[in-house]
Length: 96
Image 1 (tube, rainbow, N blue to C red):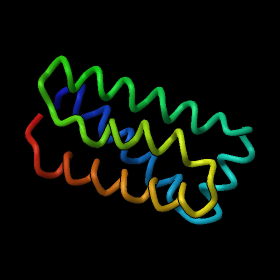
Image 2: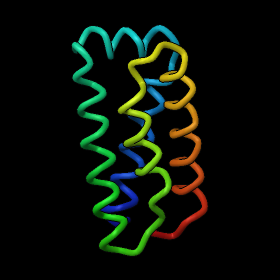
Image 3: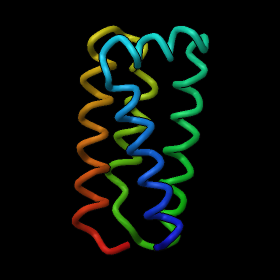
Image 4: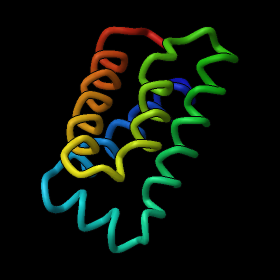
């Protein structure tokens, strides 16, 4: 399994957890929005790995945008969910 695939799975799990109503919001608020900063860093790492291996970049790009706007209630939830779906599709359909 490639480093990119492992990184995408980690990003997927992170997004799924933050997309769970109440739990995700509690994590974000209890970390003083630090979880969103961590998420941004995770997506940057995935993006760099995707650049190096010519892999799919949509999930990481969408993830970076998500973590920049996820402080908005309900918008954050929707974007975390969409990002998780994109990562799931990339992990399940691409051989990276």
